Image 1 (cartoon, helix red, strand yellow):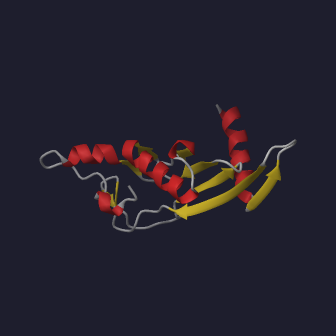
Image 2 (image 1 turned 180 degrees about the horizontal axis):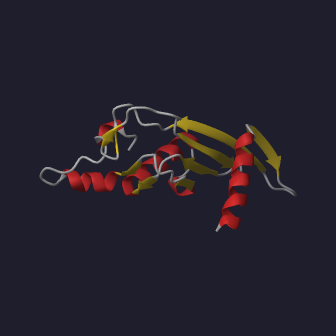
Length: 147
């Protein structure tokens, strides 16, 4: 597993270092355009993080990615500094990023880096819990989350 992760990390790292790259493919193919993006996805102070209010932020949590445009369609690869993002939360991120990039949601790949001190959110599970009598509060209300 280590052998496959390291080259992928190097590739993504190299792509993120290039602010705007315009590469032309060989032959009669249309130019391939690549752009990078970054957005702060840090929870606000006081928001619940694993049943405890967030008191400090040592480092901001980011969503970083690349947008590829082949002249006809756009594709987005995005890595989020969260532990997990499941079900409706993942679909919402995918849809919002697609809208912002002018891409189809099916052409957007969103992954979490899975750091254990970062948020883990499942909007579908939250909805199910809220339908129960006296549900546990494991995360902040949905209004403070991007989902």
